[in-house]
Image (cartoon, rainbow, N blue to C red; front, side, top):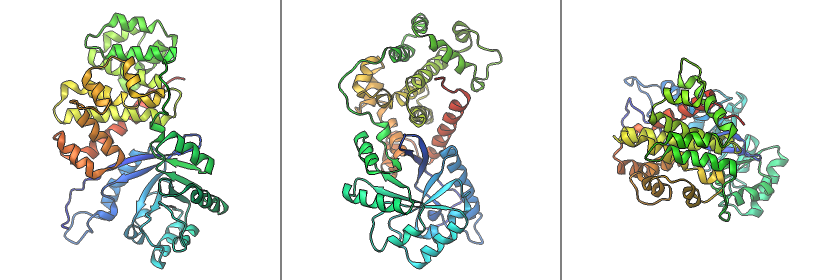
Length: 413
């Protein structure tokens, strides 16, 4: 394959959580890792170090300081590529296709001697794979492909060695509880972002105010009087909003003294967006921080994609679609029941319910990128008329934006 001086690095992330559902690390999902890069020649202006520097910058941004689990092929291990990154930042994840021959084990021991950590991906406890246990710091088990009896046996055997075990592909709350009972230390999958199915129920009173505010902020006719009435229904609401507006991220020279004062400084479009963001943040004040980051990330990503493909007049709607996309998990309700509480327009409603709409194709791009389903991404990006080479930059910009928002404007509890 000919060498090129331009490299498209597609990076997505999937969280790894503790038993208490706190964020421990991210697995970095990448389409082009260092093992896929062309090798530099005397005529090439591209070096492994330069490519790795770019990759490292992306990883630092993606993990927000948490460890990054990164897939390692045989070539990756033999060339010591993991050592190009700070040992405290990465965990090398040895793919299940790598055999523990002498060359591979020697490479792993070299990295271990330098303080690097290694994980075994999709581990199966077979005679030919047990040699890896001597150099592993984490063991990951695919819970969908391994029987519960075998999972219990392997988890117990790993614990006897002092090895923490990660349950992979935990997709439901029930699976999370079963894996917790088995004794897993960490959990990876989208179970946190999917609500447990419950009977139809009312939204708690305090959260109902925020839902109504979210709805009012996204009505076709922006009714300031209606929004002011909602402020009076919750004492903490004005405090939350004013704390956000006083944040350096908004860049106001004067301190915000009141809601009417704020309305004189913000135009209708940014005000709609601001209220939507704060309402979702308030609705998520009892959930893990990472779950709050996801709707903000999706909102910004949808918005940037929309702007990139020329939908400048609909970026507010796309931002709202992203914000609402995890509302079922935030409130532990079906999405259809959530939407019954919020009179969003039909294009957003259909998009969130998986039905045909103007916005659904953009949301499909977001979902494909987020899950690292790169073949599907090529198709979904084509559907919206966006060359996929632009997506890594838009995604990283979204991650940076979320970090800035939550750092500069923390949600009071």
